[in-house]
Image (cartoon, rainbow, N blue to C red; front, side, top):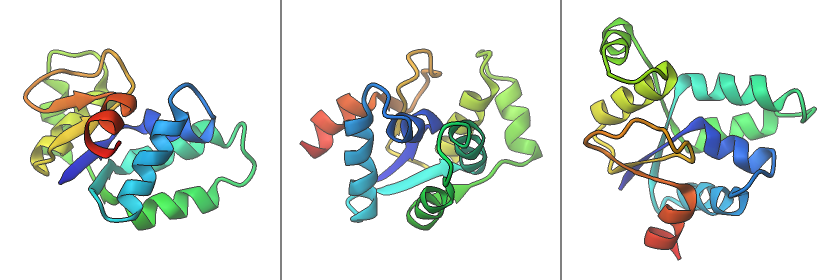
Length: 133
């Protein structure tokens, strides 16, 4: 089962924000090949940018994510689709477009305003309760 992971799940884990335990369970499940995890290429950049301010050595974590998750990218056509969605968060739109094009089962995001369309969106806690616990 392919699952798409929003940037905030990784940041919850790294910064030990609410839900970080569920984020760790999901990361471990992908690492153990229970799920095929996908992330957007800019997720790695965003993790580096945000977490570097609070964590000195983020490289090991980025290498882990890069090694465990399939990193998918955007192009002009995907950006065009993302820009035409009726949602103001371009990053979320782009993640949704890439998730849809990669035929994922669901998106895992703790962003309550993540775009709702024809892919199921679960919070990390809901996903763990439903598919891992």
